[in-house]
Amino acid sequence: MKKKLKSHTIDWAQIERFLASADKKLASAHKILAFDEEACLQQAYEAMLKASLGFMFSHGFRARSQPGHHIAVIEFVRSHIGNRHSSLLTMFDRLRRKRNVALYDDTGFVSRHDAEEALKAAGEYLSVIRADIAARRHEA
Image (cartoon, rainbow, N blue to C red; front, side, top):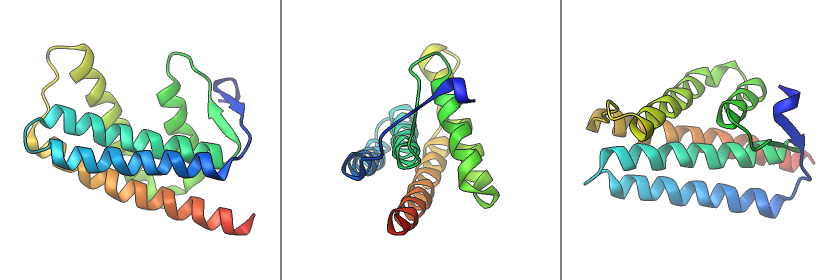
């Protein structure tokens, strides 16, 4: 996994901006659900991705811009967050796949249930990521 990552200076203000962006994307996703399930799922996924990038930065790493970098982000979080949150990471990866199918293949259909599940998972995920970052920031 090291080839997929590079070191990154820990900048708490930058990390907070990424978390704030994740919160905005999640708020947008909730509003979008009323009229576009696919866009809702996309925004929920992007909220999780933004929070994950902030998480990586808080550990002093970032993903290299190359094919598969979203997978590298998920793998990084999985290896650092603990097994008790494995179901959230499984959902994060499922959303990544669903988003890709919806984006790149005309067979990708996003139901209201899919979108609602994405919102629920993204909300829980952002809470877990924020708590982890806050705990480590206070230790630093």
